[in-house]
Length: 347
Image 1 (cartoon, one colour):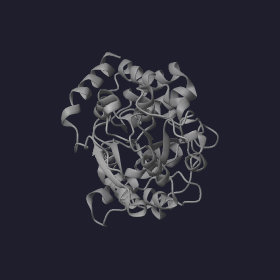
Image 2 (tube, rainbow, N blue to C red):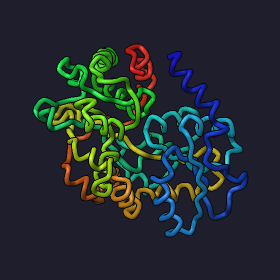
Image 3 (spheres, one colour):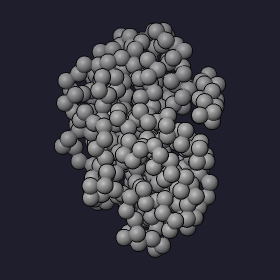
């Protein structure tokens, strides 16, 4: 817990310097002001399509997750932000618990987004899905050797696993999900054994785990699928594509064993929103067929809206059983996950 609080204090100290831009104090009549945890390159195509269709201008501030949340809290009712966008359910839950979001009533959102992927009080909404899976080197690992996330604690994987730091929110949500499935005690034992099986200290991002498997630094790694699909779709001969071509995807926990861990990117309307109607329109647009096709074919995430197909490169890698636990249910174990990380030495 001490390490967790230290992370939050360091993030708060970066609030003033982590902004990509500063929003105007007064909102434009036909505009919506956005604080976004997502990389600008990923969200910009959606915002441009929204403006083109509705005429509503978007003003975007991108920044670190903790820094933006601290900024929203500090600004309070005076915040110019109308919408908060993020890349993980844990961030959405933190924003709700911090009291910076407000409930939204929208038939469009409720019809397009399954209850599993939105807040039960309509404070936040998932707008796209991503799967966190196992990548392996086919020349060193047989597919038949792989089975579940839980199996990664087996001694046969000692010195063979790569994973990023516990500070990565994607890992926090994965472990929170496992706590909801298996209980805190069993998950802590799993995490301790997983740390003992690592080929190197946790480091880098998701692409780095895939590259490490390709380079032979480890035999298996954990990463989100959209990073891999982006790598494999790069021009032939590029370093990232060459790395992706050396690894394969394994869908863990199939056959009624809990399913693949699926998370969301999503957003909510801020409590301070001066442009609430425009903010709701933006969220509704994000689950429109047009925006969902952008999520699928440009960002390589799984569409939230039923009837929109994943990108061809995604479909070629098959389908899977997803976890069925509602995201709000497992997200409440985020703090317990952080304490487990500290106790088992997952840095």
